[in-house]
Image (cartoon, rainbow, N blue to C red; front, side, top):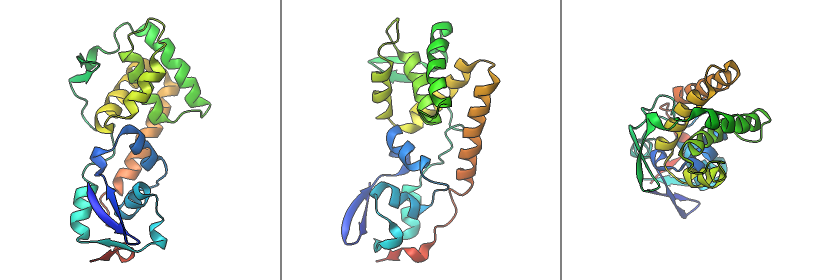
Length: 202
């Protein structure tokens, strides 16, 4: 956490690597690019353009808060996923793929209808694969639990499983490629310097 004063009120800002899936989705989905100012604004819910922001050292703040790339399609998925008191082998999570693929397609249709975002589709893929119920009745509860966990773990696994469950379906491949392109676009600007004139150092 980093303490940052905005309009003389202290805000605790998490590094991007420490965000939950829910926080990550809220930040990334509303941004065309991420720099220090837009990131602080998103987490503090304060319009920085209309605020007085004070930071001890801007370079240190950038290094501490923007501490990892946001392109989770490039993050190496872990071998094991600790969940529900078990260490699950990630490459085996899609075993029994037929029923899981059927369920995944239900949520894929929700994505097509713009009821859920592509990030949520990836989390649903993981929720389906860790479900213990034959009828997958616990998927929505699992989804909620997974969104409270760290995005650097959940989204790379979910992205991997989305590809596995989609099989050779070209329409979903197109959607996943759209996600990759968007993340690559944002990531290109990730390490660009903020418009530092909008931030005051102490």
